[in-house]
Amino acid sequence: MGGMQLRELNIGCFGGGTGLPSLLGGLKNNPWLHLNAVVTMFDSGGSSGQLRDELGVLPPGDVLKCALALARNEGEARRVLLSRLPTLEHHARLAGHTGGNLLLSMMEQYSGDFLAAVDGLRVLLGCRGKVWPISVEPASVCAEYGDGTVTRGEVEVDAGQTRGHQVRRLWLEPEVAIHPTVADAIRRFDAVIIGPGSFFTSLVPPLLVRGVKEALGEMRGPIVLIANLLTEGRGMAGFTARDAAGWISKSMGRPVDVVIANTGRPSGDSLMRYAAEHKEPLELGEFDPGTDVIQGRFWCTEIARHDRRRLSFAVWSVLSERLLQRTPAPVTTTSAS
Image (cartoon, rainbow, N blue to C red; front, side):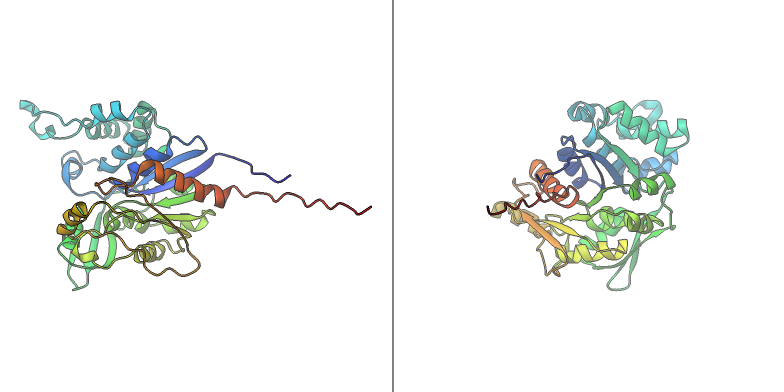
């Protein structure tokens, strides 16, 4: 009799911002998956960037969002940790920071170690899974555009791209290294999922950290790219899922094995609203036969966000097909009497 042996799969999810929590939130209810969020750390904008300048700590923005997505009670954790502090007369500079960002910063200053602080937060929230900062050294994302101009900082790189500059090259300054504990974790993943997330500021930068390429090279399982729903501004006009896979695979030094792409479209009104921001539905593009392309309707509402449940079932079907091989039933021959 043939059959399939179910086992817990240890999965690494790379990304950031808004996309990764929708993947994690969907997958965390699957008891056969052990989740690891590997998060970009090069956020120069908003409350996180300000915290780095004032307290000298690492920007906790994306780490916090992922920890929340994995929390046992996401709603409750959100209310407590995402509320911004009111202005207190004596502490004007702490105003506007979220409770979660301050909590992580305090834990980091107390333990002297960002990895330990993140782990403490995970325990506090009862997270199903782990959150790994890709590096604990501060750096900024830098881009060179098609016209030869160069810019630095997550917010600035995005802005230039939105204005119509095409990104030609990305790098980190200073060049930072992966944390050895995180490198060990990556080598042991059964599979890696990349995306969804801001392409040039959340998805590519973690792959540029020194040591990530080597760790991924030793990871034996498949690499799955979840293609974004939209391009992100004029500089990405004509950008396809195929282009995304090309960038990712060049940064990793190994091919993308599976691409999960969206065929769903919202109403014409929503498309026009996004078009006004120069965001177009991401087309598939021409893939070579070596890449497994899985398509489905993941954009189900007027807001451009992957449907959590649909995405989690699609990911599970890819992982189970690739990692939980069926053993063929033995052939029984009946001898003719």
